[in-house]
Length: 80
Image (cartoon, rainbow, N blue to C red):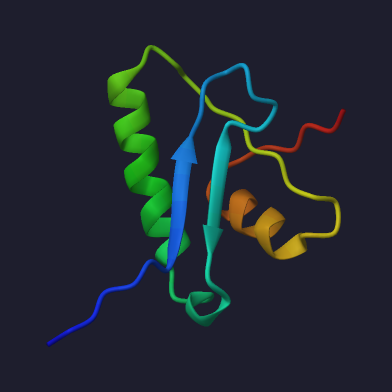
């Protein structure tokens, strides 16, 4: 039988969060476009279920891999 395991998670939280997007992906699965696929689906669901026209993400200053993944998916820079 095939076993299933969780390889990551993604959530778009309410606008009261400074970074609405929360996501993680197990390092064994990096580089396989799973993040892009999950982002696309989560954004479609979020925008169809809300009146929102954008959502935010927050990345630690030393997490360049996540930063570039977000940029690749259309996020713009905004630094506080």
